[in-house]
Length: 383
Ligand code: NAD
Ligand code: USQ
Image (cartoon, rainbow, N blue to C red):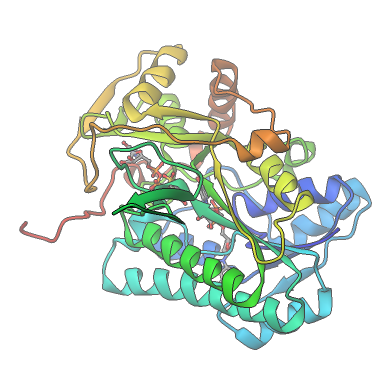
């Protein structure tokens, strides 16, 4: 299939593009470089050094013998987005290209509006581009498990059958997310569902949990193919951060009691889920939702796992939670769609954590320790 990967320079988009390419698909990537710009803005860098997009692509061509065309540009540029689809004519578009940090979206008004504008308008431009070039193109969109929040009922796979006053309907599962970033994903989901209903588009919304890990089979082949690995309190995700903190001898920063529970997934399963969704498209007019997680852990359990695996003594610190989130709650998430398509998950094991320790040790001198502590507050000042 011809697959266009949007956000193909990012933590997940890059390895997903290589995974699809390795599996025989004709892949092109699009990116506007925004993520590297946030690094400059925040004064941080990926723990693992990464090459520029064109250099990475050249390295992949050298290693695999496969070409990977690049489109440098912004989804906010509607004409560029439409022209790219018109030129490449993809069977599927995999959409990773959003501002994806919850703390970044909560920095202040400017970052909240930037996040929602970038994500919601970028996705709308893409929906129009698909409708205008080929409405049969399958959109595989990265959503997030955090769209649902932590309701006191089981979380179903996107849809919920509701009985009310003697009548029954199938409705989108009610959403109660925890940041302006997570809200942007909810708005996207509604816009995408509407275009499936109104225009007959076909889409798969992958409501993914927190990703951990670094290598995939493809990125491990050459250091020039490495994907980014964020450790700072704005872009670093929880398990990746805990492994880095353990190696540096810093306390693991558990926010609040650590009782908050999240779905998680290994980066190797992320890329495989994307392949499975691409190769098994939604029907025309269908808004299909998969919950993309393989296990659930509380933050406290993740900290304990890392502390127990690390050979040195590791301290676990409970910081005042900068976020507004429940830390005692029900959490049971349905996830049957991707296993039914053949997903065989990598479960979190101490071997993986140990390999992350090795990775961190090799690059520990690149860490700016001052970027480890959380600075972004969810609450209004003085409240
Ligand atoms: P990332 O920030 O590393 O990658 C996103 C890429 O999109 C970046 O390279 C950025 O430059 C690009 N981009 C952003 N806005 C763009 C625009 N307007 N036009 C063109 N390119 C643009 O993020 P990631 O961790 O790879 O996440 C990718 C997707 O997966 C995001 O949508 C995110 O919400 C979702 N997701 C990530 C995780 C996780 O733990 N990393 C978990 C669940 C869902
Ligand atoms: N947390 C800590 N200590 C830390 C970092 C995080 O206790 O040092 C806690 C947070 O309070 C939160 C949980 O760990 O309860 C997860 O935080 P995170 O920063 O790892 O992940 P989150 O902000 O939820 O966002 C990440 C990605 C985002 C994706 C989301 C999936 O950045 O793109 O959408 O995971 S989900 O959480 O399922 O919505």
